[in-house]
Image 1 (tube, rainbow, N blue to C red):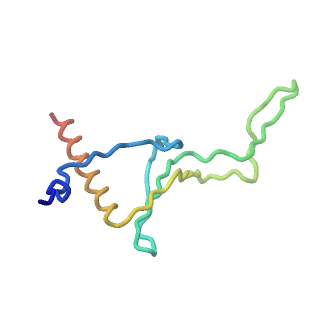
Image 2: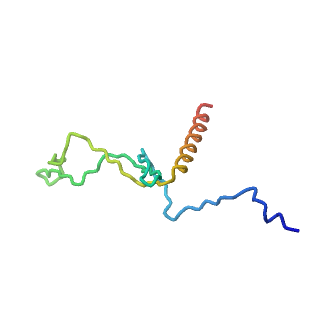
Image 3: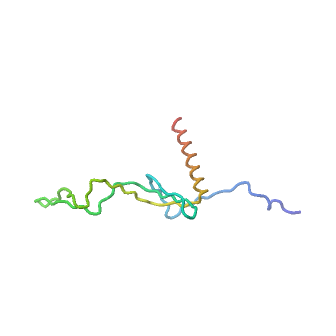
Length: 116
């Protein structure tokens, strides 16, 4: 008589989450990306910040104290905003759809909690 326990499919599975040694939480103000030529989906996450100057020049007053910042040739009337791309996520189209569904479901739950 054959043992049917070996043929039976398991009725559950356990996922164990392990964080990589370089795991970190990163803030993101936005993201961009889209389909890749290979049919995957790429999302790059960035933080926006005022662009830091590479060099500044200040005057020195007659007493040898630091004075005001001098406007130089690199100064501009147009403000610069740097979009610092911190990391990217590459996934299949199916995984991207699952992620989108997961985010939307969690947002609906969160909105429901804030209205209660």
